Length: 156
Ligand code: HEC
Image (cartoon, rainbow, N blue to C red; front, top):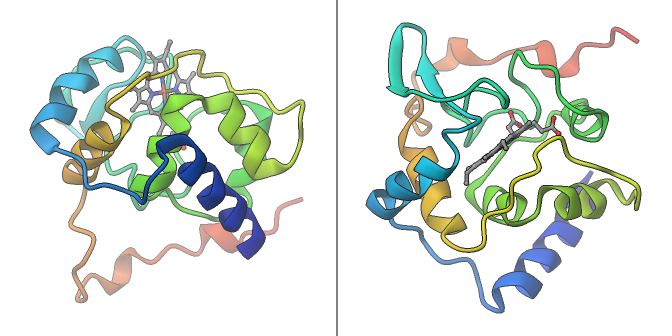
């Protein structure tokens, strides 16, 4: 699994020409307006961002299993979901710039395709920082029971 991330890191470098930069949460919240056509941010009854249902709910997406929401993902993203890898800000930044290219790179399958047709030209690091700010606290040690076994499920 490690090699997948190495090639993705290489892609990050190619695209940004520099090491990963911290995004700006406030700017990212503005940028998120572009995502709302297809994505909402909802935590149970708490609607943080009203949005469309074309794409999955993005609440807590940073730290969440890639393709792990209750949503009918495209086959390429669904294939990655089986590995149990989670979104981090760097990957999300690269992903939103060109979802299909990201999938091709991660899966090594040149015919991989994303159901997300949108490409974000700039501000990916900001939107990633914003999304990291709208989710469950990630660094709390005493939240042991949030551990899910589903990533290891073997239902094939
Ligand atoms: C035109 C509709 C559309 C827009 C606009 C859009 N998305 Fe998406 N997004 C989708 C769809 C559809 C998927 C599911 C992709 C798949 O299954 O291949 C998706 C998937 C994602 C995922 C993967 C989620 C997961 O659960 O693994 C992330 C992250 C994401 N989008 C972020 C964004 C961000 C950030 C923006 C705004 C910059 C954005 N999207 C704008 C339609 C959209």
